[in-house]
Amino acid sequence: MALALDPRFVVELSPQPRHVAPTHDVFVRRRIAVALAAVVGLLLVLGGVSVAGRALAGRGGVPASAPAAQPVQTAPYVVQPGDTLWSIAQQYRGDRSLAAYVDQLVHANDGPDIEVGQRLVLP
Image 1 (cartoon, helix red, strand yellow):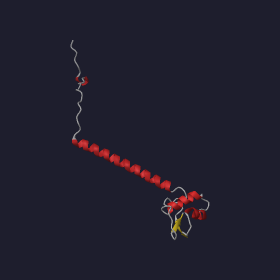
Image 2: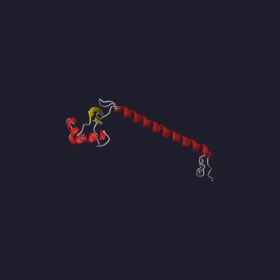
Image 3: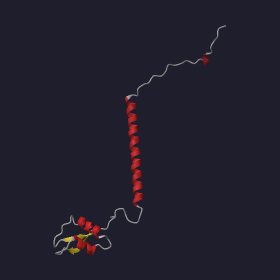
Image 4: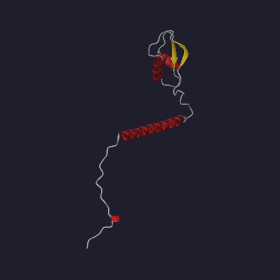
């Protein structure tokens, strides 16, 4: 007796699919999608940094644009004969150390050299 196969239950095996390279259009669309994703990611990061910067700048009682150090002011002091930076520092240093104030004087007046009649900037 011959075995008859019902055609409804016969499965035909297909060969293995072979790799097909994407077309140029598909390649371009993929590259555009990747570039757009990178731009969106960058915009999200920059937006987060901006929000974080504004949040951190608002902390504390002093605005972010205010200088942290005391402003340098021109004093009505004019160098007299016999004055040195050390003698001037002794007069105007207040509670600061003498050596630190002399360093500030040198920095504020562009060097250690002073001349009689020169107007000094006192920190």
